[in-house]
Length: 111
Image (cartoon, rainbow, N blue to C red):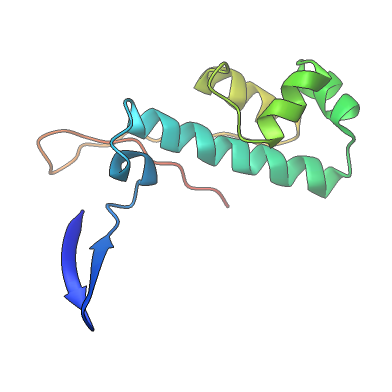
């Protein structure tokens, strides 16, 4: 994150990961999980499912669906979130490639 002054106001430019900007532990993991949750939310809306129907389809309880839709996903692994998406009719492709940086990073591209 970089800081600069624009018209007398201090402005910080995001690193591209709000969780890292907030200095939260496991920021990359949180970014990936939040991206998966966004897609799950879109799928539930697109399919017109109730929380109960979505839960049955994803293999989780309605209260967990409710929590998920409110952004409470800490108790669900990335793997479980990916399983939920596949049960909602999504294909998931994992792409691994070398990086020019000293350490690689995780990204999610939805489309």
